[in-house]
Image (tube, rainbow, N blue to C red; front, side):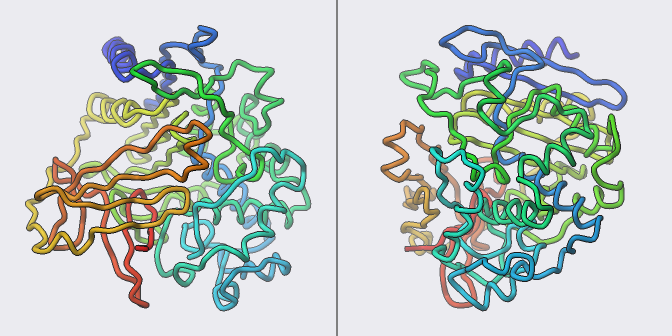
Length: 438
């Protein structure tokens, strides 16, 4: 059966112009690694089980694991006030600072702007601290705990908090307490560590051809929310631990804590159901899915999908943007466990879809919402400075607006929603992000 998956991987990677892919599967007591293509079209070096990819936001679960270890050790708890641990922290809203708890950082519900700036030129030891010093300038979109809206800033603040409380640099803390105990020796944060190993280059698609991107795509201050590089072999080690507690050394956290991280702590809009600490939770059919993914500026993408009740985990790493990762995951669920998505429900369309037309600001881009007949069209417009870096554009989304203000794709599956906060602010909640109308 895996020969069929290898054929699918090879053919779909070619069709989608993805230069290189690595797939890892934990299937009960058996593991599989499949690879295809090259680490860079400039060098032709093949992707292997030991090739490093940027895993992007899957890094958040590693940061969360380090934080939960500190909680186990009594350094703080989920309901500790963040300001108590970081007395120098400033937010734009003093009431929000008073209300902000550690659990809000883990559940993407801090309420301040989540898509924040990074400094790719600063790889010094104070990069993270200097970034946090600017949090007082971030707009507070809603009170802590009110809405779950994907927050890179929240996980960055959590990483800084863990570093301060532990008295160690963030990368040192995670390496010593999470990566090393799991035997993840090929998972690193710094470019000077990656360059001594086989590592991919991110790619953009130009006229149907994959071209190496002119940027690294990472910065030191974003390490907690998205800075880890890892091989598919190491990702399998991580998957084994998160799936069933296996560790080569002492487990970073207890099984009870690991399961707590994978339980729902706050509801979130489609396409997911809820957020753990900080795992993203949903169902495929009746199967419970614990997952995370990562996207480094549409240059490198990752998937980490766990089905704890079915003893199955799938990870996919690619060095160009495409829908290949979800396709591989779906194949594994269907062919290895017989798990299929539930059929979509019938939808009553919204009577006045023009009501939602406008611009919604995510900071790094704006979602421009227009209407074409019975379809709502969401076109992301990147900021000019990001365009100037050569970053690829984000895909346009076409959906239908239901009377319930949910956006559904052509198959009828929810992909986003419109909502109004208590203060009357209107939001487009898509890609887990609540973007205010401007």
